Amino acid sequence: MKDKTFTLKQKSNLKILAYWTIAWTSSQALVTFGSKLIWPESTIFIISTILLNIGLGIGLILANRKYLIEGDELEKKIAIESMSLALGLSIVVGLAYSSADQANLIPFNAEISHLVIFTGISILVSIGICRKKYL
Amino acid sequence: MKNIIREIRTNKGLRQEDLGEQIGVSRQTINAIEKGKFDPSLSTAFKLSKSLGLKIEELFQFDE
Image (cartoon, rainbow over all chains, first blue to last red; front, side, top):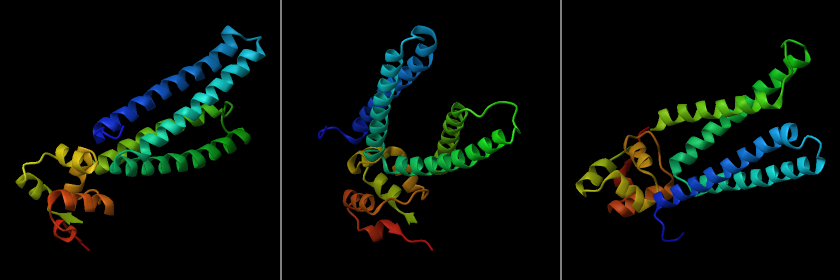
């Protein structure tokens, strides 16, 4: 790794992050659909896939951390600004959404998946805004 | 913060990619620094200064 140039190292870290993301997303699909369609009765399989999902999730977090720590200075600034916006929006909107659900102001139940989707969209939009600002 | 990095870099015949590789940042970062959209860290400013052969205060002008 010492001999690698900066660009090659960044590409390599991004590739590793992509592999972990694919693995974790696949395990999430396995947890969601496996427990409903493949092994609905087997508690041991359901627990095993959840443990696998958590393990791969930790790998994904560490790969993302490494990518950011060893990454480009401007990319770090963009990531910090985007993540702070996404985190703030998720907490504020998430709690307001939950309160609206408790007060029966929305016609459906507030699910954690809605918050995950909202956070994902927030971070993508924030990254787009920050990239336009600096690049 | 204003700077004369683009001028010095082109005089030395370096591309943004080359300078970025030398100091360990991306081409986009060099571009953002040259345009004054992004102020580099002290460590990157020292690397730029060393790589371009000028003092930091010659490369950057603090603009109040």
